Length: 182
Image 1 (cartoon, rainbow, N blue to C red):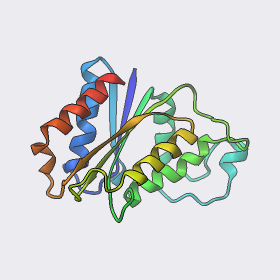
Image 2 (tube, rainbow, N blue to C red):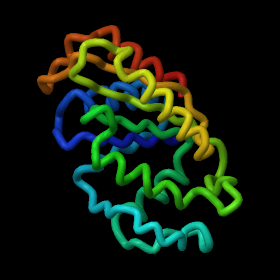
Image 3 (cartoon, rainbow, N blue to C red):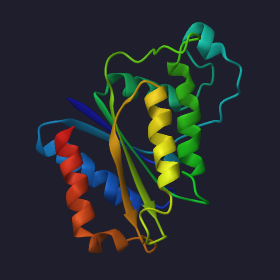
Image 4 (cartoon, rainbow, N blue to C red):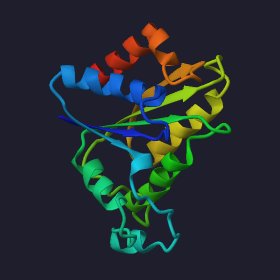
């Protein structure tokens, strides 16, 4: 099994990276091959809305997303992590998400090769994990619409300073368990 981790935080070594890595570590403990990318280190352009991908099955933008398309197709499971900025995923994460339209055919069927388990991992400064539940539900539904097999979401709330998540042993244990279950 191959598990792909995608970190959508521009802050290196922060809470989101630690949360995604906990999930990835759990998967690796169960024998998964893992690979992790930090989206903020990649050259990702916004979708141009040209719809060439719909007709031809490939995006015409020549950037690092081409490598990520291959990684997504090769993966059995994907972990996408992002902090919440202004009630949403980061701009770096949104660039990746928008470009996933290339996996949707004109009839809205999928170009994904096989079942792809999908986990969403969020960090947020607000200490109440339920504050953004509506957004988390929306994201799970959207990835389901894109034909990913959504396994669920995990939220680390009250994470402001880069190491705040280290005090949340229960959340990190849950994250590791999610990875093992992939």
